[in-house]
Length: 260
Image (cartoon, rainbow, N blue to C red; front, side, top):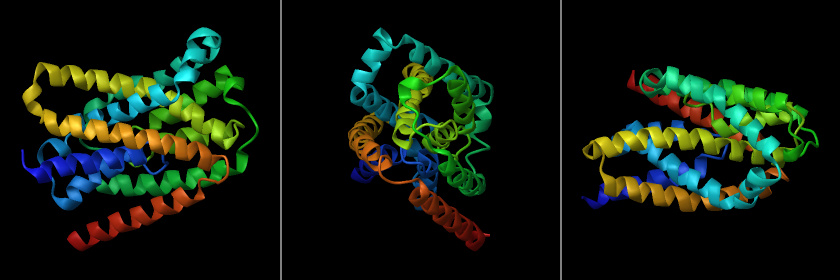
């Protein structure tokens, strides 16, 4: 395998690890970077994107291992709430899988999603409260779950919209982020499992060396990013990420205009 193809996988794995939990939409970046640089083949497929998400899933399971242990022992109520919050995204993902993986992977849709939901994040910043993760209610889980379903649209950002949903429900920003990160595990896990089955059935659809390299890079970078963000959200707002979203949308629209 050429070195440049391996480098592409590592770069995208790093991008996935950095942007999965930052409210800037990892899916948007995974779609746009191959298109921008003309990368084709494995790195420009939904299967590869899902494999990278699997790397970040492993990071969530390991980093929050104490929370997972608590959820499966003494906090089964919250575990049920997380499962409930997963249902909307799961249902929408199954019903509209083909539409999400084709039509919605448009740079124009990504640009508008970056702006519209960036504005929503700014609005949600007004409503953060003092609620703790373990004070979550059934209503909290259901509403945040609905927000997570919207994140199937590229450019929305799953972490951005669920953290914003948590703020609207009165969570403290860091606790909203913890809820968001834990909530991502079932959704990413389900998508990874479905695509993993497809890859096992037809392993020649993607390059396994590239996929493994991207997976490992996403895992390591995600571990570092989770630690940083939990520190960051305790001290700072989402505004910086929103301005980045606006800038990225402007660049996308400029490129589309120049090409048109």
